[in-house]
Amino acid sequence: MLYSLCHPDSVFKRFLILALFFLLAAAEITLVQVMMLRLHDPQVTAWMRLRQRQALAQNKSLEIHHTWLSLPVIPKTMQRAVIAAEDDRFYQHHGFDWDAIQKALERNEEIGKVKRGGSTITQQLAKNLYLSPHRSYWRKFREACYTVVLEWILAKDRILELYLNSIEFGPGVFGVEEAARYHFHSSARQLTLDQSCRLAAIIPSPLRYKVTGNYVSNRARNIAQIIGGPTAVQ
Image 1 (cartoon, rainbow, N blue to C red):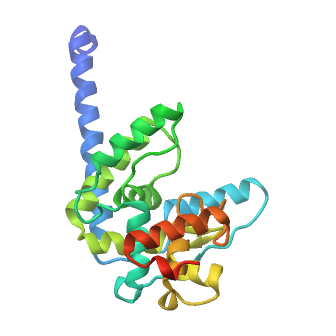
Image 2: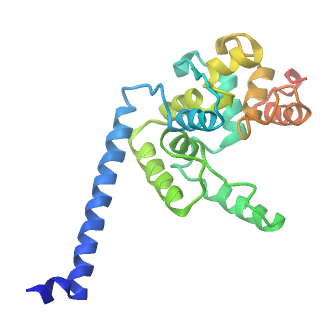
Image 3: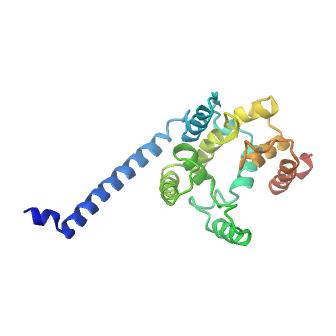
C-alpha cells in the first residue's frame, strides 16, 4: 500500500489532479470577478492598492482620487483619443492585437530591449483591475486569462468605460474625471479636443509626463490628427 502511494506514477497523477483543481478554482474566481463588473462599478483596483503600498514603503501617505463617470457623459473626443493612443483596433480585435504584438516584438529586437508591449486596452484593464506591473510569465498568463474572460463576458463599451475610469493619470489620480480636475481644473464633461489628446498622451507614464511638456504636446498633436482634428491642438 505504501509503495503504491509513493510510486512515481501515483505521485504524478496526484499532482495533475491537484493542479487541475487549482486551475478550475482560479477559472471560477476569474469568471465571478468579471461577472460582477456587469453590474458593479469598481471603486478600488489592484493598481490603486499598489500605489498606496509603494507610498507606505516610503513612509508617505497617498490619497486616492477617483470619481466614476458613465461612458455616455465622457466626451467622444476623449474616448477616441484614448483609443487612438492606446489601441486603435479596439473595436475590431477580441482582446489581443496580434499585429501590434508583432510590431512591438520587432521594435524591441531592433533597440535591444523591451520598450513596447503591444498591450490592448482590455489587457491593460486586466492588469489595472487585478494584477501588478511585475513582469513574469505567470503574470502575463493571468493577464491573458482575464483578457479572454473580459472580452467574453463584457461588451466593448463596458470595457472602455471601465478602462477610462480606472486608468492612472497622476499621483493618486485615477479615471478621466479626476484627471480633468487634476490637470485642467474642470470636469471631464468639459474636456476640449486638445485636453483630451493631452490626457491620452500621458497614459503610458502619467507620473513622468506633464500635460504641457514638449513630448506630450507633440504626441497630442499626432493623436488629434488620427481622430480628425489637428487644428485644435496647440
